[in-house]
Image (tube, rainbow, N blue to C red; front, side, top):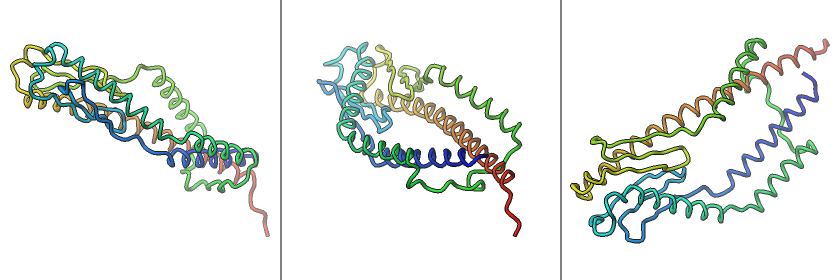
Length: 243
């Protein structure tokens, strides 16, 4: 591996570390709390943009038709999530982010102030180049297929299958509540069903997220092994001089 490639890898590594530091310096999203104007439906949106609690107040029948209860939950979520996003965007220091990003780019262009490129051992173990190339091509194809696929959608139900919560990684997509069933229930039973359905949907989303994290870790490990293999070629091309 040529010195130019090593230098370029050093620049990319330094640039990435600085951009990560810039992002980590920004405030994280906070919880959002919302309710409808009548106060019948209240919910909490977590920092990841997913509903973490949905509650229906006692006496909701006086303000909302049973058939409109599910759509109202979705509407309250959308408004609450939008408000939380706006609050976070207003707290985001865009000028500071741009300044740090530009400093990272300037450092990359100048090649100054960059951390030394790690050696092969911290990156991973060298691999057979042909096997490594085959695995990399498979991983890239899987990544392209995932990018082209629609977002995962999961639905959680309560035990009676009277209440459903539909989520994507981006948030709440739907809430259905059987009107006839709802009219026979008190607020406590309705809220218990909402909690059960929400818990099931969130568990399915977390399972999907765990798979994606494992896939990302696999790609990261593959990249580390590739760098270790390239570094080994550098050692072969530049053997130590005999004293």
